Amino acid sequence: MGQIRAWAHALGFSQIGISGIDLSDAEPGLLEWLNAGFHGDMAYMAAPGLRRARPAELVPGTLSVITARMDYLPRDTPADMPADMDGDVAGDLAGDAAIETPAVHRVDWPTLELQRLQRPQEAVVSMYARGRDYHKVLRGRLQKLCDHISGAVGPFGHRVFTDSAPVLEVALAARSGVGWRGKHTLALHRSAGSMFFLGEVYTSLVLPPTPAITAHCGECSACITACPTGAIVAPYRLDARRCISYLTIEHAGPIPVQWRPAMGNRIYGCDDCQLVCPWNKFAQRSPLPDFDVREGLRGGLLADLFNWSPEEFARRTEGSAIRRIGHERWMRNLAVALGNALRSGLSVGEAHRVRQVLSEAAQHPSELVREHVAWALAQEPLASE
Image (cartoon, rainbow, N blue to C red; front, side):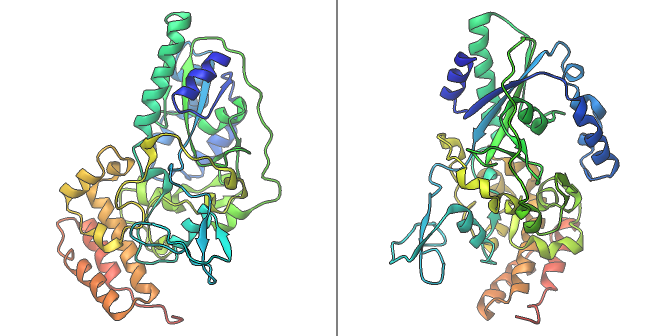
């Protein structure tokens, strides 16, 4: 096990855990979640049935599961940033370049990210998606880990997964000591928070399991309170149909009108439940350049990103997880955010520019885009503002 850990660490993984394959106690919760329809349009969640909780049925011959954790905060994520008397972070919005000013207190990175939500013209992309597609990063490195193991023990049966097959990732992580299931349903670790990816190796090797860890959410319900759409309907229970990550990424059709205002300026995913989690003060920076932020995906303006042509979208999202939603849904999401910007009460000049870029897409070939553009153009500043 020590050698596997060393190989994994050299490949950029932060932690390795091993578990058996008995997930029978997770089956009732999985069935209840599916029967409630909480998976929404994600038919791939229901299609495998209970095979998701039965590793040996998914990959015959599986005797152990290796779970790997890879932290993903970008390397330049600040430990804290200078803040002025009003609590605003000093710096150039477009480049996030901090300008030193007399500071009366320090602002940590979750606060910095939450402040982005208060800038209605800024496009907010979930932190995990600002760099290279994690599927590619983890899959390749997990396979290299298997190559190391094979070189030591000889050929062995294995299959690598990274959010790419019916695998109960969090249940496996909990059993192997890589994390416990938080009330927001994500895996949490005391020394890493939740800002990490999980990958698994289903293997025919019989490996000694690593100890599970106990849950440490206690009475905290910050994630439940923070969810903009109330998608965390109960502790450890997520109705994906209301989740902004689902609506902006997994959902292919029109975004339900009742959830559009709550999306704010979030155009791909949502980090709110993680940003307020106290354990994320311990989140780790990735040592890999793969998760460094791409141009335009932090601090970019909604109107600028809305103007990306299909060709520019393809070029800028090459090798990115964002590419999977396609240009049409990209514009759909941005149209909603631009409408919310109009609702926020922009200056006359700012509102004029937003309406101009929206109007130019009013006759877009896609009915999906046209409908969301029409909705956005119909938005007016809230009376209270």
